[in-house]
Length: 230
Ligand code: PMT
Image (cartoon, rainbow, N blue to C red; front, side, top):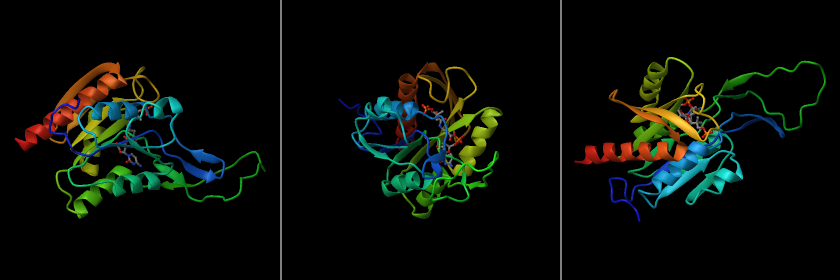
């Protein structure tokens, strides 16, 4: 049974996992995101709404098998951005736990790059920022009652960097994880997260399973949206 809450009936879009940008048909640049945090957020979101959607990069079957909502599998940043943008509607809650690739190869070789010399160099260019593009799209189209929660994977200047990301990408809230801390961040079953609101309010979630952390994050979003509607 769904909890009756401010999130009932709202569309909740969760992104998770890595993206990939290809150098040639068989090689790509990516990262170690497993999609476990995204899958946990989907499970937590399902307690509040029937309208949950998971938009994810390549993840193991152990992760995708846990998904019991509409899901869209993508590879590149552009595909993830298009999937998120096409599914937005007024009142959407967007939770972006994906780890998109920030830089992509400047050129793509349609044929497999041959082993020739002992060294190989590539130029990389800035890739699409999905979250920033989504928040710009929401603003430009004057979409109503939207809520954006991002994640920040940091290794230093934690709060300062996360606050900069909130402002730059126009978020309502960010979940900061220290990806150097054992048991936290990429491809772990647990996480420790600091939730920071755009007004600077800080809430610590202790190290726990990604499912327990996701439950707390959803409870915080529910309280914030419920409070704003009172
Ligand atoms: O998938 P797991 O193995 O369970 O690991 C979970 C996680 C560590 C990937 C997750 O908890 C996490 O921290 N996700 C965010 C990773 C990241 O890209 O952080 P960032 O600080 O670089 O990005 C800030 C925000 O912008 C994020 O919401 C990210 O989804 C978004 N972003 C980043 C880069 C980019 N090009 N486009 C984006 O939309």
